[in-house]
Amino acid sequence: QTGDDRAAKIPRYVRVNTSLWSTEEAVQFYTKRGFQLQGAFASSKGFAIDEHIPDLLAFNPALHFRDDPSYKSGKIILQDKASCFSAFVLSPPRGDPKAVVIDATAAPGNKTSHLSALMGNEGKLYAFERDKRRFSTLKMMLSKAACRNVEAVNADFLTIDPSHPKYSLATHILLDPSCSGSAHASVEIEVVEEDRLNKLAAFQLMMIKHAMKFPSVQKIVYSTCSVHATENEHVVRSALQSDEAKSRCFKLAPRGDVLPTWSRRGQVEEMMGTGDADSLVRCVPGDDDTNGFFVSCFIREHDSTLSPE
Ligand code: SAM
Image (cartoon, rainbow, N blue to C red):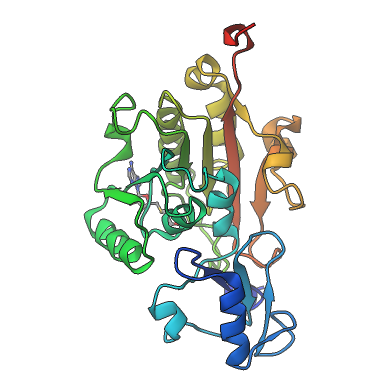
């Protein structure tokens, strides 16, 4: 299978930006324009409501929405289904003016705008981005998507002090750091450079361990668009074994909290045969109607010795 063959099997996903529009309004809008709710592959005019991610629509892969008024106005975000998993699994507090959430590696901002919408545009969402040029793209995207609860910060997440009064209250952190990008369906044959993967994995682990130091954090989602266990299961294993995880009682969230009906889970052999693989989600490019992806979710166990009698 070539990259083009794989890409042709992936629907054109359209996430309704619920900060500006509702799925009902979107369905009505597209129906009026001649589309029919009959599945993404039934015809070029077919579309569907996704079964896993709320407010996600799937259209025929041949379609492009760049010139559509719904895209130009920010009412829809063109985002692959698998890439919607991260914010959905993090499931930040909704409609809570006191909520504090961090997107540690934000640009271009698809997952930031998704988090903002899931929060009902309430509370505070800090979006860090290290790269200056990508930071400008992020700012543009956030303004187009009407994300009023986001404060974008052009900074390296690793330099952010977890005890800073603004950030120390963060309860949820999304970590979608730079990775090899090897899971994109259009990637043809990848020359695997072990050295590069190991460097990326060391950086990814450092990011998770830093996120674990935020004193109020209860939930951390770590995701990549890599197919390599080096950047996925191995990073998660090392994070679980780290002093940061042990001293702060982090473990993997159970399958029931991580897209339970999604059948492709983490690679058991890469998790040393433990049941932990079931807590992880993988997507295989082309085979799962998505690009390739990996999602994990760390949660903080409450220390029973500290709970009141
Ligand atoms: N979550 C984004 C989205 O869905 O639109 C994609 C994030 S992309 C995979 C990773 C981003 O993290 C890049 O823009 C990169 O510049 C940024 N980045 C990498 N290391 C960082 C760091 N230490 N602190 C902040 N941003 C970082």
